[in-house]
Image 1: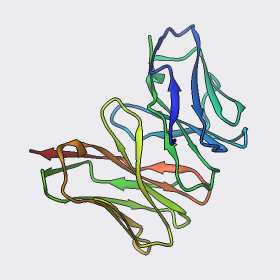
Image 2 (image 1 turned 45 degrees about the vertical axis):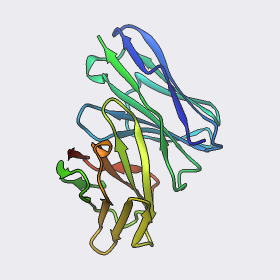
Image 3 (image 1 turned 90 degrees about the vertical axis):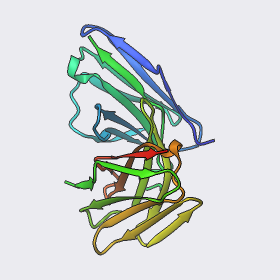
Length: 113
Length: 110
């Protein structure tokens, strides 16, 4: 099983809403990642969790708040987003930050209105 | 910061071989990857190569790495219409960040 599951697949939210994106893997991976991908662009790293601790924050605005409740789950809490935050949000996992294979979920397509 | 470059477009005829190229700048790269992305979908890991290897073959896919020139390529043999997608190379640096190239849109002409 090399599956990373993301929910929801699509999300439309207003600028005053609070919502959460969820990511789950059962491969025993200890590193989990959030990426943001705008249309026709490569994915850009947002956050990395290693052994349930935040290890990398790529200067992401505080309206994005990651959480890793356990080694299988990764959340991204969203609050007061802007229309320019509309994008595909991708979750990934690997055995460790130094692990060889990094698997991605199918993404959540977020639209901020 | 790391810079990973790819050509934007490639068109090939069905049955021909496709070669997608990638250059990177970080000399501390540990692993280099090729991912496939179909419209509206996530990233599918196709293959990867450890930085001390120079070639890896996996069925129709051949990865070549020239570490001296920091050049990576992906060859797809007998390209099929189902191979049409965007292909990203990615570079895991010594800091364990995964940097993606700009992506190459492969179009397979029947």
